[in-house]
Image 1 (cartoon, rainbow, N blue to C red):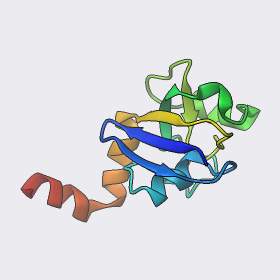
Image 2: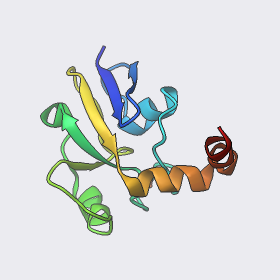
Image 3: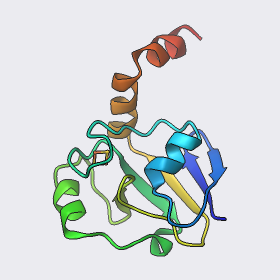
Image 4: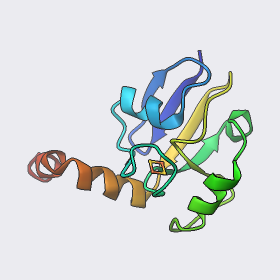
Length: 116
Ligand code: FES
């Protein structure tokens, strides 16, 4: 089972091959946004894959189109809802845009982090 590590916090989780990075993030309580519910329509799940990029499923045309609308796109950018795991471990960095979206979707967590 591949391990997915989410940076910068370092949360990691083992999930079966074929799991999307977004589902891994949700299982591992990582702060990856998902404003469109994982339907490849918003770019709030944008991550940088720092390790294991080539082991993920290929980028489809619709993912490429949505990534064009994301901020600070890099050659290792993926939409977490579209990228599915192969057999290798993966490390991905949650973009600022994605973390912002996650906190917008979880206002209680934002308040807890400010106070904690
Ligand atoms: S959650 Fe909207 S594009 Fe991935």
